Length: 241
Length: 85
Ligand SMILES: [Fe+2]
Ligand SMILES: [Fe+2]
Image (cartoon, rainbow over all chains, first blue to last red):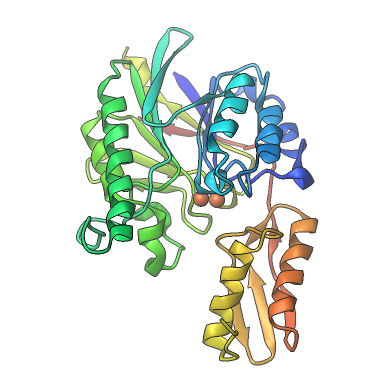
């Protein structure tokens, strides 16, 4: 059995440096991999990126991350990615990684994802150029996730995003802002990808548990939703292998 | 744009400022205006961030009383785990 630890929206800054790392003490005894669902920083500055890298280096287990919208705020997402990778964190955007966890092969595909809303009430690539660009990006990132999942042939598969693939895990957020919180295109990619678990963040007021139309468990691991340092998910599907 | 004093617009403006102001950069906070009182709700990461939120809200609404009902983030280690098929 494989145990996965996950958290998102830690929004690290100088004022909380070191505090999160402290709450990760003992994590190697409880989980085999740590997933970070984006919004690791507050302003997406290089300085905050460095703080995040220090927080997660040498934890003794693989750490796999996607970035969130806050991590893009200062246009330093590439530098932040490079610093995290220097610290040993695997950062995904439209790609995947395969980990061997005590003989179980776990594949993780990730993207930040983007908004647009949910089936029947979603944006479309139509009208003003700004609107077209907005929804075009959602499509592009969702397609990236679908391709990254398709490439995986592993015992277990996890999809890691910042934006939500489903509405259920947004429960608690005002419904008017759902189009800014996720897109059904992410769920469609997940449902095509034979996924065991989908992890996301971004919706601080949302709920932890949901499911895609295709029956894949979705978990919103935003720190304010979890009310604890991270969540632990044991994937029993690996027993069959 | 000059801030309209209607509670409806005021809460919208405060919420936007809390996200856009570099001192706070907080998304997902709730701002409720009732008469002369502004209630701030949601989860924040530290006491310092809480002070900054109050500071930014007070700047936009100098004539209002700010009531900070935010809670501090909980970082305790998880007690249990969820088993998934
Ligand atoms: Fe966030
Ligand atoms: Fe976010």
